[in-house]
Image (cartoon, rainbow, N blue to C red; front, side, top):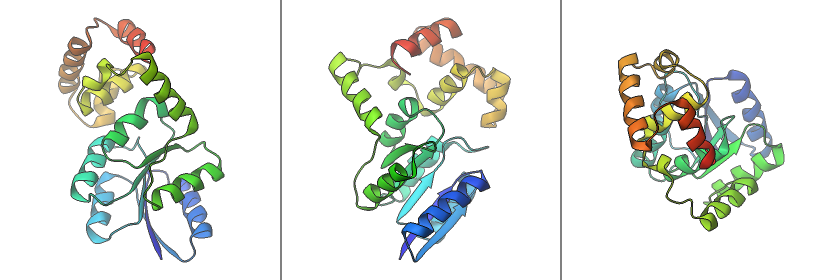
Length: 208
């Protein structure tokens, strides 16, 4: 019997995936968590065949959670399942230990294919991302300056690119505005940009 853990702050999403998994894998045992804290508690209690993890959840450093799972439970298979842009997040989360990344907008057939692949010990990325990674390797974009950022700096960059203010980010990540300001100044220095406009231009250059 397969055992799954769904980590998502939206009950509707968890319910839909639960129905899908129950139909495909019968019998199966499906546990749910609404944030990083409850996910860690579940992981301490049980071992799962597959963990489906959302990226954007309140009061949760998802990249940190992924790294924690990979270090603490090295055999755990994690599928990132999110509305967040695949080309921005997939590579970083898979580097942190995830087995795959799939959009919540993907058809059921592709979601099923991703789950089956990972249950069989294989990695999974969409065809569109595979093509992009191939293009990047041929165009010499491996020296991407965004890859030099720390996980927290990268998280703040993505929120800045979404148009969020320092105050918005401090609320979203549950940290002080002064801390966000420090991270922002440091990442601007690392990237060699002076303002948000230059940051956006650099992000476009590297297809972020």
